[in-house]
Length: 172
Image (cartoon, rainbow, N blue to C red; front, side, top):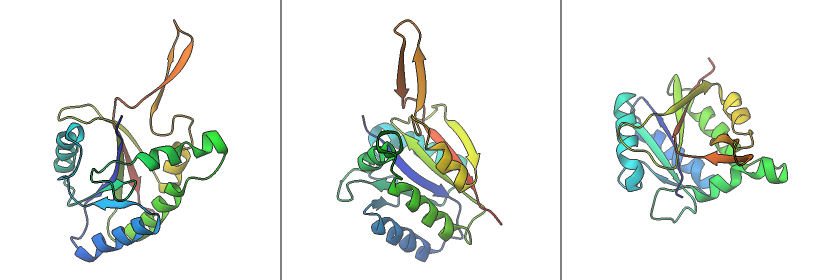
C-alpha cells in the first residue's frame, strides 16, 4: 500500500518559501514534489480536487526515500510507528515543528494530509488544532490511520481507506 503525506496552504506566493520548505525537508532527509505531477495515480485526482476546493497555491508532497521517483512517504509511515513500537520520538515531528515555525509568518493556517488512496469525490476525515495537537494526535497507536475493531474476529485493524486532512492553526 502506498502512502502520500504532504502539506498544503495558501501562501503569499513567494518562491523563496518553496525553497525554504525544501531546505527544511532536506534537513530531515525527505524529498519534495511541489506539484501533483508525480503524485500516484490513485491519489492525484483527490489531491487536485482538495487543492482547488481550499484554494491552495502551495502544495508539498514528501518523498521517502528522498530519491524515490514517486511522491510516496514509506519511511515517514514507518517513522510514525516509533512511539508505539520503541517509545522513540519520530523525526517527522521535528520536521512538522520546523515547517510550522517557517509558515507562521506566511499564512494563518496550513494543512497536513495523509492518504493511502484518494480519488475525486472521496470523503475526507478532518481534524484541526495547533501543531502540538497534531503531534499528540499522531501519537495514537494507529497514528493517522483509523483503528477499527472487528467484533466477530475479536481483532483490531488499522485502516488507511479514508484520507486524513489536519488543519493546523497558526498561533498568533
